[in-house]
Image (cartoon, rainbow, N blue to C red):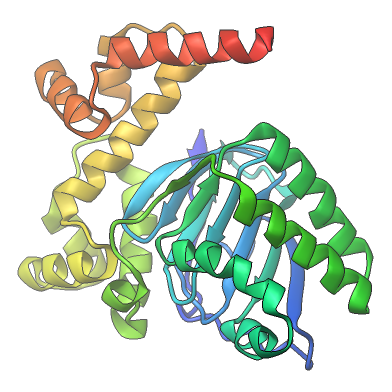
Length: 301
């Protein structure tokens, strides 16, 4: 049995531990108060070191695994929810580095070389997932060096890491909507509770009215608030979560597509095939063959 994080903390995260430092390094496990649908003014470089589950960045829904590496821009809502057994605790799941635009606004005037990082920071407003295994392996080593050092040495490792990521061309931009469209402290807190509820129940029939009632809101008002905060209407959000689950099932084993359909929360195979084609541009069977082909190529490589 899996369970989502229980999320009750405020959705805007105020990091008051800068202490005059240019970057903040943190690590935490799962569950944790830091695991919630939230946003903050800082960029966040986020490395998953244990467990797998669902990632929500802006209007994007996808899967994460150990050694997944993401960069989110200022005020872009995000959350990572692990799929773990009931009462299972992951002592160390995440390694994070946070920093603000202020570091670069000041640095550009002194160090012209920092301007080469500007395109990376610009892309971060949509959220980035880095895909190159070699880049991620080097990034993991640099993240650990950041964790183990302090002062100018830590800052040096940080800039080397950003230079590495800025040079990578194997990445995916994630959200179609940016922070100004999504970040609203009042609405996103309610959406946080909605996402928590949806994540716990999306594998069965889940009408909008049920979620609205859970939040004590009228359905029409909830629908408007939810779309404003996530960039997706309710049905589209749930379907994307279900398709993400189906991709996970298709990649992990040889279950029949029909079983994958129902286990993902769809109630008929034709609707599942249609939604999958719309979102992934291929049939579920084709997707599975492609995953197997890529895994084979990686193993041979």
